[in-house]
Image 1 (cartoon, rainbow, N blue to C red):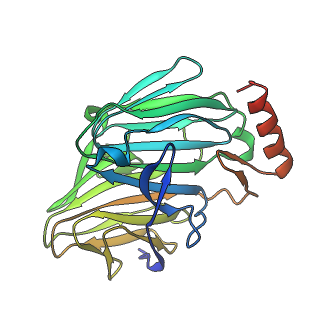
Image 2 (cartoon, rainbow, N blue to C red):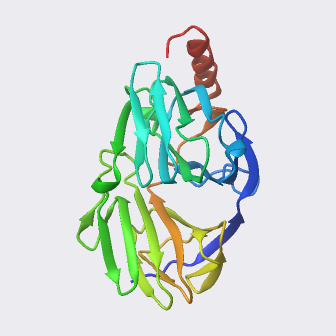
Length: 276
């Protein structure tokens, strides 16, 4: 057993995106540009409608995947191929943009708490131009594992304590756990030893990860290893996310993520010509 340690700590940065949605950007900011294969992590949380009501109108994507995980509130997804989806509390949408699409994510409420995450996951070069697809997962389809006393884990991707996440067919072999700990709980969680991994604390004052107190809205990048220890002196909740690094060149321009600048120029031209 090789325990992972913390190699870097980053706090979420207040910013806005879409049509002015206020959020915290954790990955994809100056302090942490990316963590291969993860390109971006945003947390959006507000009970003020003005912070989210304009949503994310039509915008394009090519060359990567978006993962939306809702904790509270409701969003509606739609794209230029006629696909629609309702993102309810506790639901997940794993969207493989691949060769390109134009979509929107708009609030289905005018008041109350809107809370969730969006994670961007890179695609390998061989899959950049695959046909777009969706995995829309309702809350009831996300299994719950109990790996230790006082520890409850929603298993979105990967496997834990006999529970297998519903997300499938992702080339980076991801782990995506939503972990809730009661006061005094402690657990050793297995991770694929070669995966890059991070934890992000989103509820409670702090959670102890690999021997260090990680506070709310703080992300900890983990070293390589096959086990991470997490414990709590008070109730807390965090994401544990890991993925197989691609080790490929990354060329980025807004909503396009490719391997070369020439491919970025091609993506822009295709979008402008209506070929998404």
